[in-house]
Length: 165
Image (cartoon, rainbow, N blue to C red; front, side):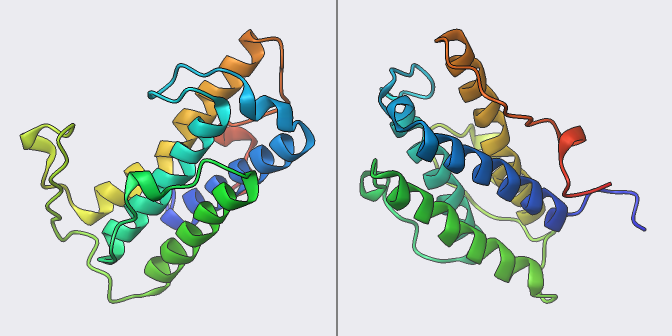
């Protein structure tokens, strides 16, 4: 047993959270139209599109694939947005299954919002960021919905995950 949490386990945790939110939003589609003030999203649906769209974009960067333009990320319907997550999972799974991946290699990321000193992370750091990104946002979404009178049964903490013991 390794003492650290593996990327495979973090990916499984990501899948658990995404599956919960997809099922919750399928059962409560009206939530997608609620106003949202997180990350520039005007609605919950746009925020969910951001979460799964960014997940895909980081995966594409890590794999050296062309990165989908922000304006090409669908904002609905939910199945089209969830398809971004499914595509990202395929990329992450392929990367993690490939023993030749050099996770210590440095990437160059030129994004306007990223400070210059943060533009040369290791691929390991980018993978960790990509796998944690959605969890931070799912917690924000659960808080937003609870404050708007729509509590969920979301158990996003790692302690509740079946991805590891």
